[in-house]
Length: 141
Picture 1 (cartoon, rainbow, N blue to C red):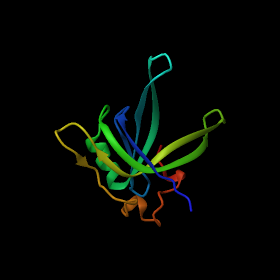
Picture 2 (picture 1 turned 135 degrees about the horizontal axis):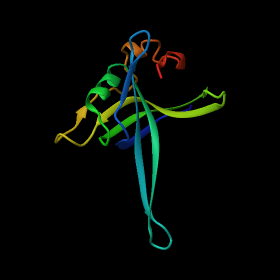
Picture 3 (picture 1 turned 90 degrees about the vertical axis):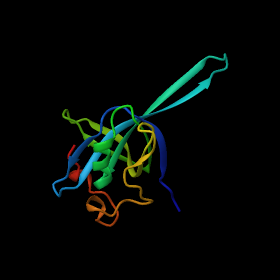
Picture 4 (picture 1 turned 180 degrees about the horizontal axis):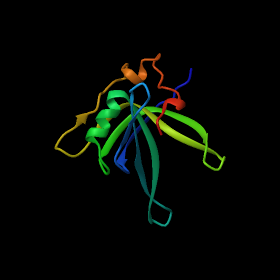
C-alpha cells in the first residue's frame, strides 16, 4: 500500500494563471506560501517559508482563476508530482508540484467559498481519462 497525499493551508504568492489544453481543458497554476515559526535555543524567533507550486485542472481550475488573487488564503488537498524538463540551454530541470483534487477558498468576504469540492479528482473534461490528468505534453505552460 502507498499514499501520496498532501494538505496545505497557505497564501497565494501571485494571481492564478489559467490556460487551456488543446482539448479545451482548463489548468490553473499558482504558488502558495506556507510558513513555520519557532523559537531557537537562544529564544530568538525564527521563521521559514516554503513555496509550493499548485496545479488545478478542469472547472475547479477555472474557479480558482475567477475567485483567487495574490495574498488570498487557500486550503489545498492533493498529491505530489515530480517531473523534469530541459530548459532553453539544454539543462535538465526538476519541478515538484501539488496536483490539487480539492481547493477551498479561505478568508476574505466574511466566509468560505468553495471552488468545487470533491474527495477525488473531478470527473470533468481534464480528468475524464481514467482519473489521471493529461500528460505533461498537454500542459500549455
